[in-house]
Image (cartoon, rainbow, N blue to C red; front, side, top):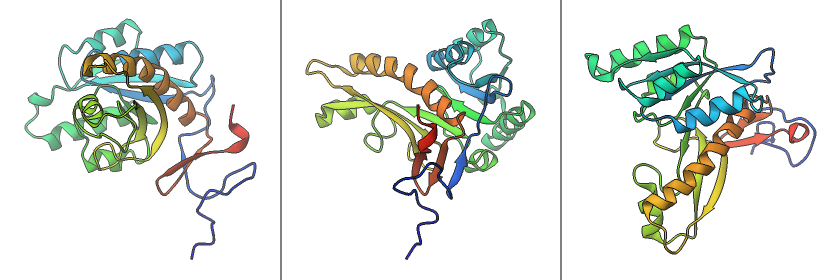
Length: 234
């Protein structure tokens, strides 16, 4: 039987045990984030805007794409953020690509990696290189409807609420510990496209909030539960 030393308590000003997530950052020492993209980068833009407006104590230090010509790269350059394009198809193997990806992120001294429309599943090698330091956002209320076509899944099952989830990336697909979630009602006349559009609007709010929490120094991981220290709640 556990003595509770590695479990969140019912009360108290300071949590002990567990694994600390992120760190306490501020304007003078912001959390250094790397953003991985494959497409247009709307979540990237929302996160960059939140950082620049002072809502999140983080600094995007590099944007990396696996696809040449991804619109997100031009948007990042326009914001003055260094970019790298690591064209996946130019590498002899997935292993070679991921070694270069790891080297690129480590050279930029990235503390937190944010997947923003990045369309590749990361291998265990990348996850081990950045343990508990990779975030993803998925357009459903996990653990419901992981993987592909979550909006179609939600409508097929007739759920009344869908939404989005920010989670830590582990070796499963959309299975990592949950950082934050927000629900979105499913309307009777919704299509996958209309539901996707409304959830994306919420993603643009939730992802910066999740990164803000990672930069607060208040989060701890107990098994699969992410818990927030009482005295640091806003």
